[in-house]
Amino acid sequence: MSLPADARRCVEETVQKLGGVDVLIHAADAATLGTIFDVEPEDWMKAFDVHVHAVYHLCRAAVPVMKTRKEGAIILISSGAGMRGCPGTICYQTVKGALSQMARALARDFADDNIRVNAVAPGIIRTRFQDGMSEEAKQNNLANRIPLHRKGTPEDVATLIAELVTNDFITGETVAIDGGMTMRMV
Amino acid sequence: MNLQDKIALITGGSKGIGAATASALASAEPMLPSMVAMTMKRLLRRVAAFSSWTGSVSWSWVT
Image 1 (cartoon, each protein chain N blue to C red):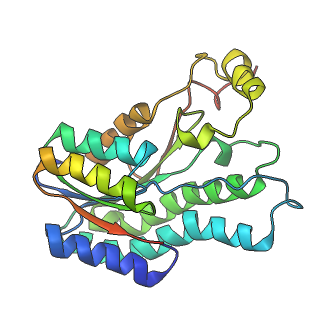
Image 2 (cartoon, rainbow over the protein chains, first blue to last red):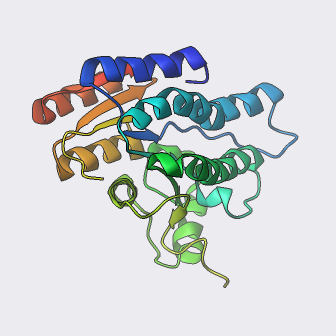
């Protein structure tokens, strides 16, 4: 999806087969771990391709379609890691932080077209994405980092996304869904 | 936005948050999901499941 042609094809096929695009949700994800010295330049660029450049290309293809339908909703998947500092994940934090700002910028640009753009910022969610985490880290998350002492589920995040799609008066926001992990001070 | 007969394009729609979102939107009201994924087998499984209860679904595969 990092190529303009791929994004255009996805939007065009959707319009051709189903008749339009009203909602765009960019949930493709990939983790890039390490400090700035661990992340090779090609991996850095690839992370921007998956997270940021894909949104750029998809929006350029989908927004004109939404404009013709006089309404649209775009949801980007940011992360708690894009709101706070985490050791050893600079690339992931940077792209996820960029998505929150992209949501604000897109929301402002397309508000007059009744196209709303929001982001969600999940914390620790029970997906295969978390498989690489050590048992010690998992236990630490539940015991010390997440005030509600449990992981979220993809379904928890999905209900928030559905709310942001259907609620007509929210735009430009990044909503955390993380059991209180990013709101805590102690 | 009223979801009735709306069309959602979801990348990463074959797994995790993307798949759960497709289910949540399609079950809230009849809507037509369109999913994009990088893993063909998983995508086709998901499309087959959706087709059986939403009637129509479109999919694309990118590498």
